[in-house]
Image (cartoon, rainbow, N blue to C red; front, top):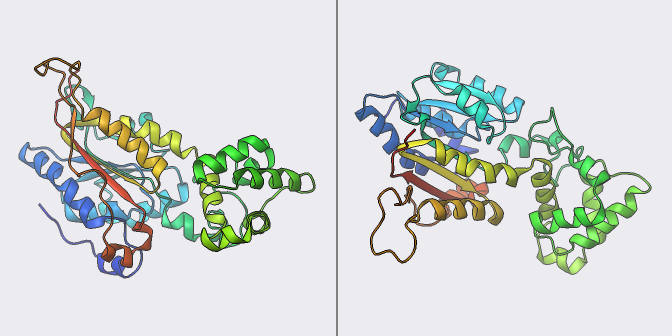
Length: 340
């Protein structure tokens, strides 16, 4: 039941386009149609609303769809809400981290329930950093622009990247760079940060980039891309507890899906995708003890995969939207019903 095309889609396609936009609509269309066939109005939670790129198109595509949009960034939430003014009767904004299920459930429409309690028809989780956070210089996410080392997705709370660099022990800094950024020179970088902060703490992205150029060998800089890419990614993940949120979110949204519901997960690096893949593998496997010749009643898989493994952007999409180059998209469908 398609509605009027989103009026900003042509303009969006000439600039920033939400990753996997058309495929996302295709993956979620069956849950909208199933709800209509049952006489219900479907509810989808966009757990990573950002500037509402995906949600604006979904609301335009499906006349009866209701979306609960979640974002920890109050500025992004305000901008997205303004963008979705035309859909205000079908859109609810929630200021929270996407794994705050108390806030998510509290925002669901009263009729969004099944036999087990509050339930949703679909979930969309795009774990990438929003374009606004990357593009607004004073947020400190981008290594190519000098700005205060903040990197908080919710700038109203929590320690900044500068705080991490000023207070973490050398070994803890090295762990962050090595694990979250896969940085080969993690120990050397951490040691240099600790040495320099004895004189003055690092407070801007330019100061950190200068340190990286001084610390990473020239040969490695020539072949490994910009020296800030991995370290800035690692700091962002640490500051925002991103992997902890993903660990909580994937099972939490799967648990909220009603029978036939679908969840779409978009991951941009191996650490996120590994979490998604592990949970999906567990949920799509039989729970019957190994060795039994038949499936025990009630022990079959909870979910089935809709995508074959992780789908990747094709070259056409990458050409239009370079940020889609690293995305891995997985979608699953609940095949058992929830019970109280």
